[in-house]
Image 1 (tube, each protein chain N blue to C red):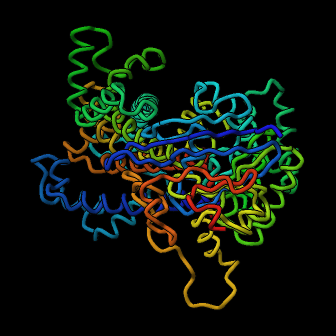
Image 2: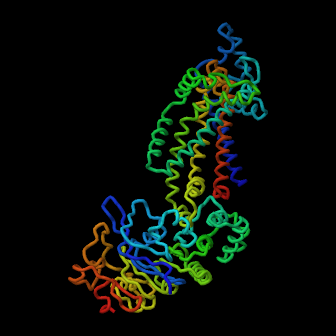
Image 3: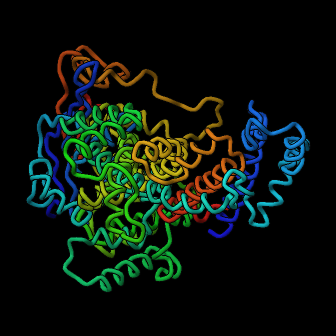
Length: 314
Length: 323
């Protein structure tokens, strides 16, 4: 078990290194001169050259990347030159909001998706199965920003069941949870469909395996066979997909945070990209990639808890 | 002796795209208390359908056309699923062919074996004790420490021992052993057969033993059921059937047993021809097309079971003369 995790962790770290380096390189190569944005149109050529020198913008990309990593290892995400504060400040402020949003989306979509998938498989070819199938595909097909806009319109503006904007009063947990419901619903909806489909397919496969026949032959009750003997095996691919799906959820979070005017990494990235605030964009990228990799590690961990064969794998 | 299982005129069809496949036709036999009865026959002869029918685990497209299967006084084919559920694993149990896939991979064997006892009104500690006890009997070393182990941590032979322990834990009246040693190598095969024999005599259950291996049947069983294309073509005491088979199919099957080939040869003997298409069984005797003795009579008339001696019959017009 320990070795398995060490391996996974090392892999995650190397992915983090490669991904963030590549992103940095792409960012630097984007058209648009950061110095003119930062210093304004009235800056002289001399001021800009001076600033570029200060920021290390004249160095080769490789050197810039290595310098960047050198700073990160020392816990310095860089300086937000637009507002003159360390980058870590807005990023670490925003991260919990996004993490909470994604956690909310995963929790409700995984619970409902697994339940619907297992039930559809158990009631295969019934009306319930067909309706779930159609709904799942509809959920998958609906883009999350459309769902976000419509749910805002219907549940917040028309029905006034939920607050429309903001993340709730700081320190007031029930209020913050209340503000999580709509955005969490919006970005989780398509995942209900995905998970239900994956779990259904995987359940049907598992239900035809030999060990299910053995369990039936030994008189183990049907509900126990379906919800424990089969589901524990069938849920494994769904957990992996969810772990990877956090990447998709992060990009949905950008829309949801803008639509619902929530603070968060997505909104911060959007604002920083539009203002060419490179250091903050990089900080956000680094943190979101780190967050994403942490989530896949958690998925691996959950899978190892569910599947003893993974635990003893060398 | 009183029969533990009495199967009469069991016929099962499968609804397929090509039409109704008559997988079992008019299968009858009985198993006495404490008896081991073997079932032989080539692949596709209906052995698996027979097991699935008795366990009521048939696929959805199966249709029970006729027949009864009395386990003591309960008809396994007629009782409700609920009643059947109560019998499975307790009065009638199975050891399956492939121990590598027969056990749930993500639940510890201790838990799986405790789950089988869900109908018992005893404490969990007692259930555990019972599990340890039976695991010890099947030869798992230090069973108490192995309760939390998962199937992949056992070797193939050990897994089959665990499967046998699971099947016999509730002391069933009838155990169906579906080629329990086919997936094991020869040394393990002998060990597992010994084990089955020992436990059988201790528990006193009857066994329906399905196998391709004629030598194993000869050694283990007292009676044998010979199946061909969904029918029981011959039934009788092992000694008689092996010494003087009455059905031409049985005779050919015995000739194909590698253990009986005396001369060196480049070609292993086989039975020429193929199994008939069971969606449209040919008229007359089912074995007619592959039989050397087939006559006009075999085409016109389906042979009834002909008694050869007490408890020994064959479905062949020439059963007696063929001896």
